[in-house]
Image (cartoon, rainbow, N blue to C red; front, side, top):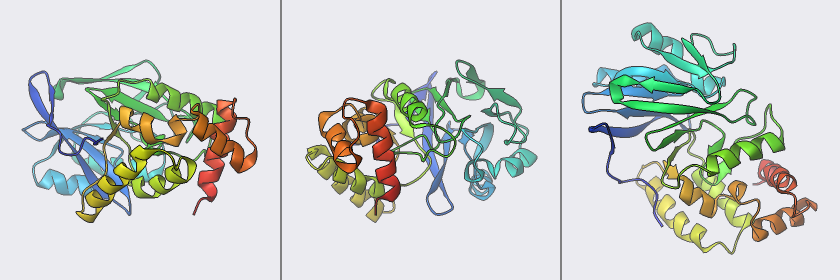
Length: 270
């Protein structure tokens, strides 16, 4: 079992596109997807400096994609837009300034410079207006889905978050999951506590520890990989449901109750 690190670049309309995470803050990633000329989308720039530094080195932003209003995802957008006259796509949420187009579920975002189109998915739970962008084999999902984890429920309910995760889990298995925090090793410890009999977790641990030891990101993941190892996508698996029942007595036949128990367990997990 392997992730996508080291895979060939994605090809779109005969263009070769390179996916690159720009580190920001302690554990954020600002995703860029660029062609050979440096034309790129930039996703969730909480800090402008990594993007502007990359631009000084040849990156040419052509669009910003924002998934939700938290400052570590949108805080750098203004400075980037001050330098580049480009569209900024964001959820329907006035807490996000400077958006040139606000988009909702079922809409499509076109980036003609890269020959790409992204479907917009509303995925509330972490925040009430959180969206994801899915296209060209990539999923930019902000803080909803992490490798072996999911976001905290700041504004949504367990039922909303589980429905959002179910939507993402239904995407093609080879979809690259471009989440925005390097939480993988911590999430792996929790996933192992929930499902110690999952043999794929021990193999994945070795891969991820080696990546981090070598200074490489563990992301992107893939939908197929997450379906095999992420407890929040496995609430209907008997072993995961029974673990949630053991934690707080959650009804193992109720996926929402199982999810709520897992999320609370993760909140308290050390």
